[in-house]
Amino acid sequence: MQDTLTPRQTVEKLDKYVIGQNKAKRAVAIALRNRWRRQRLSEELRDEVMPKNIIMIGSTGVGKTEIARRLAKLVQAPFLKIEASKFTEVGYVGRDVESIIRDLTEIGINMVKNEMAEKIQKKAEAAAEERLLDLLLPPLRTSPGFDVPSTEQQEQHTTTREKLRKQLKDGKLDGRSVEVETKEKVMPFGIISNVGMEEIEMNLKEMLGGMLPDKTKKRKAKVPDALRVLVQEEAAKLIDMDKVVKEALERIEDSGIVFLDEIDKIAGRETHGPDVSRQGVQRDLLPIVEGSTVNTKYGPVRTDHILFIAAGAFHVAKPSDLVPELQGRFPIRVELDSLGKDEFVRILTEPQNALIRQQVELLATEGITLSFTKDAVEEIASIAAQVNDRTENIGARRLHTVMERLLDEISFTAPENKGATIAIDAAAVNERLADIVKSDDLSRYIL
Image (tube, rainbow, N blue to C red):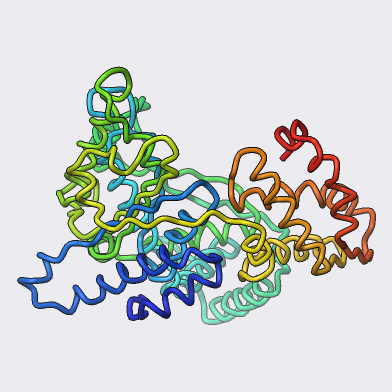
């Protein structure tokens, strides 16, 4: 795990994907480093140091989610993005907040399982290959009641098997079909899961799953598909699930990150209508954010040291509209800057996943050589900024709509124009988007 990054190194790595927003990057970089520092404290003090949860304040499309997502990827931490508006107070129809931790646990388990699967991949492939060869050429019978194979038969069988192995590796058997046997759990009845019933369903499935035998199902499959199925089965046998669960729960409790989006949508302070439920959601969130134990099908998960990053536009509500107890659990507040033309130019060209580069590479798959002049990039950025100012400001997401509109014809006709070289300059951008920029109505509905 790359948990030894200094705050400066973390910011530098985030700079490759997110333009600007240095205050937010610094806040998450410090929060990340504090985790590393906490692990090096004495055991009695370690449990006392709580994560400093963060509220990011900024309109849509300024990079709130991207900062949190990239941060989790940097440190290979279990990461869950969830909208706070999905939840309702216990007693209302809707998801209960504890499902956040159950979802995060599933993500952590899958993450560790995939890491372990990579380590034993070669072993699993070797075992699957042997099983597939057994299907293509059944082993010689040596059970009681059958003649013992002669040395010559055994040698001939081994020679044929090695020939098949070579043909399998060379892909010469890809057209052949074999009958594979797969195992599956059978539930005696379907469980209709109403919202908020996840825990009941989970317990029922766990209880009944252990009582019911695995059902085997035979099906015909082409050799490559059969090999894939067998590799998965062999990998499942080699992975120690107890070890996976132990490591995953430790990782979730020590380095899990929950990104609570749209926190402003539950910030109502009135005591009538739906706001009653909103305040209830805030109060339900409190124990999870401040530290409690949530039961999952893999065991209890403590939330004391999970980092919560909340985000919202806060156009109508304010952070101070959250219940005081919840405000106190998010001591760090960071305002993200709105994006203008200069930032859009950088977003289009600088990041590793820059939008211009994405479009160039996508069309290169069709044999099209696409290029953008410097003034074209500036014009695209300028148009995106203008439309954001005149209609709804959706930040950098506006660049996606502008680019799609600009390249609509080129993308549509690309298969018929293989080998073409297309250079887009400012004049071409204006020609394609001029009508939309001039008309408020068109830009409102098209962009």
